[in-house]
Image (cartoon, rainbow, N blue to C red):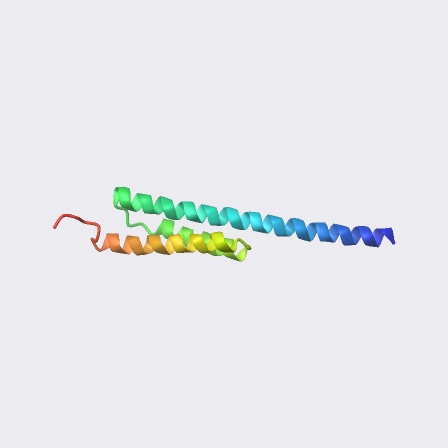
Length: 100
């Protein structure tokens, strides 16, 4: 009977540990997405880059984080990535050019 209880406790522990690891990986992915979005924004403003890689990475990492249970950080990462893409579209059309 004790073996059955040990197996139940072990499976509970495995489920809790798996959930914690999933959440940790989701949070890491979301934070990396936010950093990619902010870094892409700084690059776009500083060197007038129109490369969309940072925005796409921010969105992708945000979606991964969202599906790995880091809902709020994942959503923030996606919003930052979309904001970066909108800013890059404006920069590529010359909206940031102050010279007439």
